[in-house]
Image 1 (tube, rainbow, N blue to C red):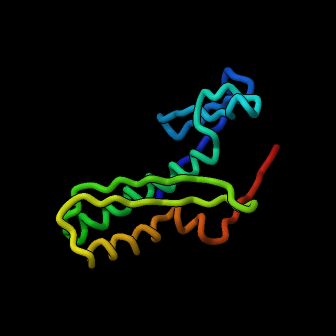
Image 2 (spheres, rainbow, N blue to C red):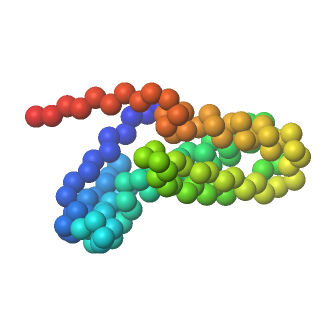
Amino acid sequence: MAQTEIKVTKGAGKLQHIVTAGPHSLIADAPSAFGGDDAGFVPHDLLAAALGACTAVTLNMYAGRKELPLEKVDVSVIAAEQDGVYVFNRTLTYYGDLNAEQKESLNKIADKCPVHKALSGEIKIVTLSN
């Protein structure tokens, strides 16, 4: 996997930050109830979006390799805090002439997407500062 540097810099709002990855950018912010301007994604939503996008891409790649009749997959991720733990509830909706065995195979592959694996296992974060 190629490495991409993600840069986060202060934006125009009180808590707003601009997140860039190569030529792509988006805004991260906090809701107004927490002192932000609600001008962009909250960080937990970005994490949920990463899980949803990674799941969809992984499933489409797998279906293509296995020549499964998957026309598309919709991924819904609801993120919520429960008993002090952040929980991601993911729902997969498959479109295409798939049988039960093919859907079960896709469900297993969904858990193999890199973001799911990172969230399910131990993550090592190295902090460097200057």
